[in-house]
Image (cartoon, rainbow, N blue to C red):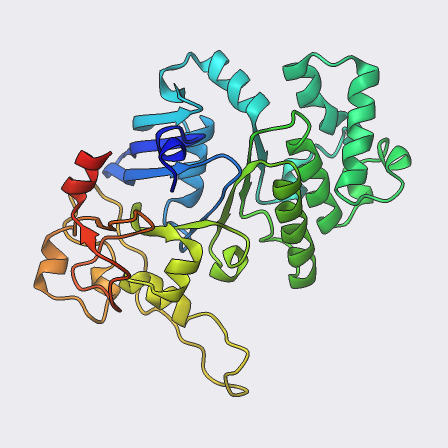
Length: 344
């Protein structure tokens, strides 16, 4: 990573923690989340349901649920989003960050024509005239592969299939020409063929428009080959983070290894039993001890249940993991978490 990129990332998440007060006591949904995203770079965020993926995105966008406390700092192009007034933060993220939500069926307003829904953000944040906003909406419908965009501009969402609805959501996310595009489980409700089409479209748009992109998914196969870096979340913690090809080639955390082992493989025998991860995701109650994956880990020992492992980092900064008994071999010299903080 070049020094200028390291010092000036587009997005920098610094020690974020999200805590929700409940009748049963505080719940820590995210804890000690630290990562950077450079310009023109794609990041994959993966983990099981309940790992904290969507809450991390909501914390970045400023749309966490009522009662959720967010601590730490989130810098976008050097500006701390958490220190901004609510209105100014909404203006910044609305104009410079595009968001593609998980379910297009519920994200689109069924009573409003799709053209109006696409142009709404551009008119609000860029001050486009009605004529210019209409022209941009029609252009974007063509960009995302909607046939006859001029005619479809006036259609309602129910005229389109699930895959086409998701393309419309992508068009809406691109309306303000964002520098960062976030796709939060954007293909979950789609069949496999349409999933690939939408993911290929996102990847092509990210490269053509030189945007940064975050792809959030529970499926490692979705981020493979489409992201530059990979962040693995479990129990609200980052357990592994690094260059995507490095993490796939040499996973160090036991949870990452388990996710990779659970992926179906083309060369496995027909009707072979799929590998699963035993147990359930951990409790998020404040005050828990040890590694959150310890109860499900076959290599866990006493220390794993008592002490949260420190983040271990390669000297080149391309691979980080938090595991007392990592799998595999180091891909280069490593330094401790404390040494990393001093270096940065």
